[in-house]
Image (cartoon, rainbow, N blue to C red; front, side, top):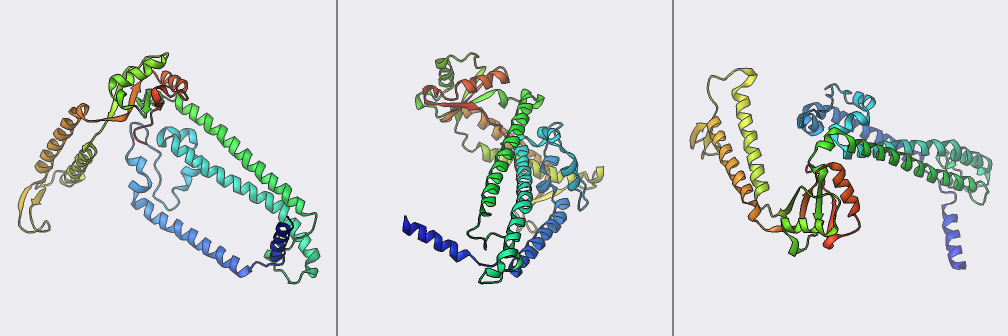
Length: 361
């Protein structure tokens, strides 16, 4: 213990009197300000021109979930931040996005509160002590060092720092508790919302780690029958190896986009063009040789072929290899929640039963 005490004392003594370079802090602050304003400037240039990236929900929304439009002006994004509330956006951007935004808001106000607490207590204490005792220091500290605890040693004023440390801990706990309570409220409101109540995934349970002997629709049903759940399942499905279905679906979606681009050019401005768009097949770099075909007819036929391939693949999905997960649907959302809570720690037949996630997640 004496050796450890001596080592700690040496570490403390080595830091006593150490000064902070004002120029280094000033240069770092200036650099951060320049980087911050540069980032905002570039963002204001890119945002109006790349709305698919910065405002994807505006274009790719479902039903009446379109978020509010944002002005293309340089500061048009500021107004929605100030005027729109979580209750207005939860059904448009989802609960996960709201949780992320609330977490950022919590950090902002938490660090603001910590800064106010420290600046109101520790800086006056440090400055008062250093102004009174800097004549006894081996080095003349600069103004930044006088605001810190680096030159305070062997004084009862260090208890102020300990108290403030506990105060910071209390602030963190208080902020986390308040925002946690608000998130619980938002989550409950989301569960009560018409969108969630009417969604299919909300009344569906996912079953994980299904044993090989139970990897069938009948096996999933047997798992629920073995624990005698209070509400029967309306449908059960074992997961299947989808194979190339995702690639086929993406190929189909790409074909739809290609056809849309051709139709946009053909029907530009609401008027039909004089000539139908053409496409060159088999040429050199798309400009020499090959065969020219009607683009609309070509992509329409391609779309029909991909749709038929996707439908045929889906029709044969039940014949493909079963996976170790499955799904079970209930008649109502409350039934699914009750059964999920009931089976949370039971592990029926070695499986894990929980609420199914949103397919879009």
